[in-house]
Image 1: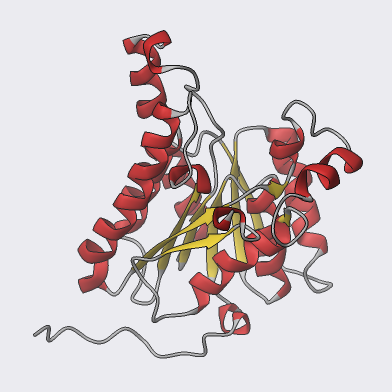
Image 2 (image 1 turned 60 degrees about the vertical axis):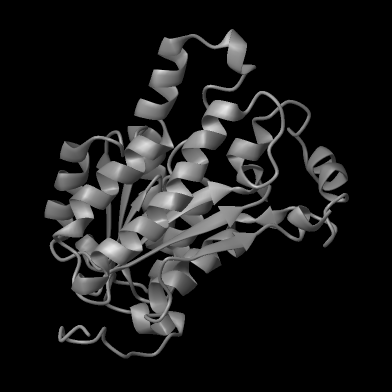
Length: 265
């Protein structure tokens, strides 16, 4: 039986995150940005990591506006760079000072196509430079820096459990993220650091609206009508689950699905 100090007991409500610091990799758009706004609204400090400097600057301004008037300059910070690059993440941690939570939402879908049509280089590139690389980089950066009660939260998608042809390689990476979640939860438990993943269905974000046929409100509403709850989720609904996982100190090694019931049909 472990004799290490138990994980801290605190309120599991989001308000308990006031004064905590969260690094959000992929925080300049979509679900990551929505999470940043929610966190700042409950008094957490946030550090956004994103590749596009202009979009990152706009995101920092938006998150800052969601906080109380007279916010200190370091309440919202932006670090431009590739979230899969360990030096970028080291810079984010250094700028933040103490970091309590890390949330990784970065990475779109790459490497799609029939397996026999993909080259070996295509497969290596997808598995080596996509979301899986970012998850490993974030885990390595956070493993020795997060305090007891700190957390890592990753993201995956429902196609991991409802695959369709042409998605073998990206879904292999997504499935690896879910497996890594459980492995890291065990490995980091002695340090009292928690690791979880949110498995998302279709969420109304700029990424979704970049897909063919989903570039308008009417198109998104029509496509979402097939979901059991009658619509796609909002970025805020998706982000709220990540905030819950940061706040609740008794959840680790879990993959929580947020999909409006899509995997039921």
